[in-house]
Length: 85
Image 1 (spheres, rainbow, N blue to C red):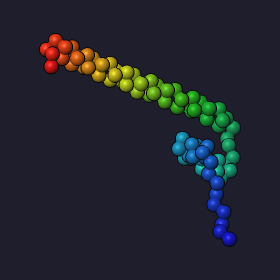
Image 2 (image 1 turned 90 degrees about the vertical axis):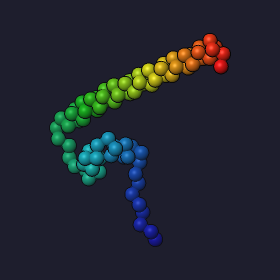
Image 3 (image 1 turned 120 degrees about the vertical axis):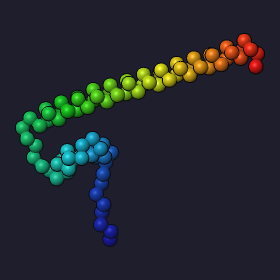
Image 4 (image 1 turned 45 degrees about the vertical axis):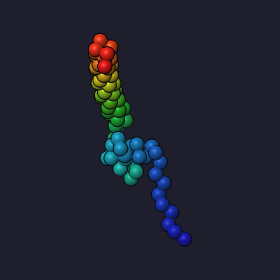
């Protein structure tokens, strides 16, 4: 009979990706210090705000690129209409 492999859930993978140390401490059953949950929630809020700002910055860049491409297409189309090529 083969030994049973440990089960890894998607939330385990997400926790490990977010913070390897927190995943390790939880997996070995390390006790939590008083106030650690409040600090954890504060850290999660900090990362959420930072990731949100990063996502907004990326979407703005995509918008600017789209506007530039539309402008270039309009210039090429206008030049084609004027010079009939």
